[in-house]
Length: 375
Ligand code: UD1
Image (tube, rainbow, N blue to C red; front, side, top):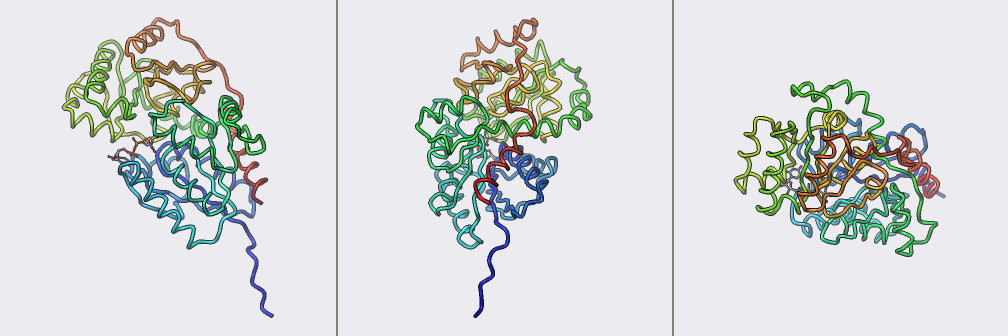
């Protein structure tokens, strides 16, 4: 009698879709490959981000393998984009070997969409960077975080507040592990290269002689009045301190549409550019006097690098960057941001401390957790 061959190795699917996913998935794949385990990894790129500067450059610089599957979903309104990710990811899973599990990272639409599909197909899902909460449901990422954590099987936590949030939400402790911050693994892995690049010097700027700015959140860039106030804030700052501003495509589109682009880019001390690669932005962050941003990950990276960060948002899902790190949540009030900038320039800004588990080895702990759960 013929016996069907049993599957010799298990497969784990790893999902990445948007820029902030790539520096999180890279160290996890590297750690898994270093194990020489029997597990086969299948990397799925949803295509939520697709420009070279928003996607490919991160694969090149972070040494991420070419995706095994590309869903090519592209941009669109949230419902349409989420729906396309779910539909195409489900089709892929239905046609492929059933994996032992799915690993999702962060809080973008791809994270939530692929979690929903996996869980409904009965495939276990691990969420890396679980438990973060801003308690601001106007943020699309907050909805993604809540949905993902409420249904994923294994919640891998990066910030001590995540443990408290999940416990308050009644998540059983056996579903939760504190693994630390995989984003910091990528910083640790690329910092020497970033320092050797001297990106600021290449722009004619002194170390600690400029501010690095990134802005892309709908709350800051989608309304003309707010974006105009921010352009005024940045041009006034640039009168005192040069500003380096790599511009996200969403922001570039809005600056153009609202007629604000020229005022910004024509300022003699504003170095505006397209989005930059990982090593370039890390180099600029490392030698900046301060960073002004509305990003999630930059709050963590600046805390690790001990560089002051003024976050132009009403809330943070990463509170340890404020309580122990170098971050200030300025809210939407630019007066608070101006005060924080003055403190940095006057030398009285807080210095920050090291955070437990932000040590360059978080991906090892992620791999330990998923191999223990699924093999
Ligand atoms: C997404 C994430 C956000 C993350 C951010 C980092 C969600 C809900 N949001 O927001 O959490 O902080 O990525 O970048 O998942 N565009 C391009 N090229 C690209 C990608 C986007 O031109 O490669 C343009 C398109 O016009 C698009 C717009 O940017 O409509 C916004 O992109 P989208 O992915 O919808 O949201 P982000 O603002 O990037």
